[in-house]
Length: 416
Ligand SMILES: Cc1cc2nc3c(=O)[nH]c(=O)nc-3n(C[C@H](O)[C@H](O)[C@H](O)COP(=O)(O)OP(=O)(O)OC[C@H]3O[C@@H](n4cnc5c(N)ncnc54)[C@H](O)[C@@H]3O)c2cc1C
Image (cartoon, rainbow, N blue to C red; front, side, top):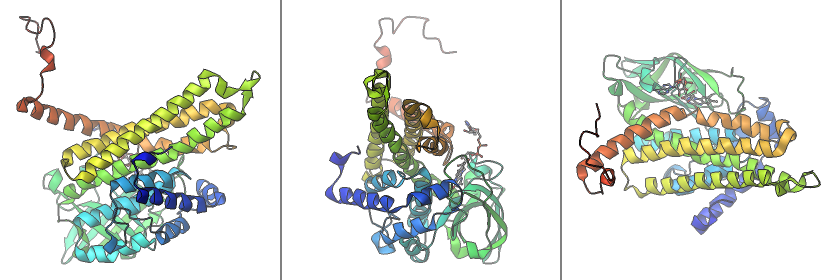
């Protein structure tokens, strides 16, 4: 599988490098992460950094790979094959936090933070969600009070992937409680050594071993040089971050679901019932067909969206809509794939003899984190209604509503 026919030779090479990286991971390492014996996969990040596989879209001058989304999605898919959490940790560091620095960071911030992140020497986490809620971004209660040349941060963030291992935290905090919501927050690059505390307290259902932590700020002093973007300008940063958070997650999720298909399809060729391989029952082989179709259609959406974003020709609001559609659609397809795979496996799929149950546990996260799928629907409908109004005003398209026999029937088109 994978869309080899859409890849350049360099992209195939990149994919192969990533496959080598994930083959390097010992199975005990994966099991220890799932058992929460490993709290943060530092060794994996070090190895990924050595192989120049962190920061795929970061410019080469800052230690990245200098690629585009069309390259990134290939790595993202492969990196999740050993487990969703590998992509989560890799993604927040090398796709999400770096995005803020590349787009909004000062030259000094880029030179200081990007190279060690890309080399796998330092690790980053993104802190949006708070105990009081994650969907309502502007409702944040973490504050950053100005004190001379510094800001003093107070508050808590919750469920922060990579938090336990992170050296750097990209934090959104309220800096003007009186201002309109979209001018009320500021984004900061906060270093652990400035006084950040983390607690590894969650007994997660899946996606374990990725350092998902509570992050606490108690009078943490952050110099103004660590503001990312403008003071009270976090809204702009957040809008940009929706792409790597949501689109990157969608690409990763395909990789986490793919092994479920492979394991279930292999099983169906070996397992027999009623004297024949179970794949000879359409009830089984059609499930495999459904899984293949779901993954390929998910991938088609990802590849198209990557091209749209990379082109630089598609306006930001449309890119955000496509990223939200990708996140919603792909995570739903992948969730179905994991469950179909479990059904194909029968009872043994529900045990830890095969990793299907782990894949199901891991993938349940995908429709919740980086913005729930309900929030994705909120964005999709909002952007679509806006685009549709512009289309109507533009008048360039055929008005399909009139293609009905009684389109002009008097007194029938009543709207109120
Ligand atoms: C393992 C894990 C890792 C995570 N990693 C990170 C991370 O690295 N960084 C980070 O900042 N956060 C992270 N999160 C947090 C995650 O992004 C949030 O949990 C998510 O955005 C939802 O926020 P919430 O849990 O506060 O739910 P709430 O915002 O309280 O939402 C509860 C329910 O209400 C629905 N809802 C809320 N508002 C609306 C609305 N306007 N319209 C329709 N439905 C609505 C939601 O869809 C949801 O079903 C992680 C979470 C988990 C579980």
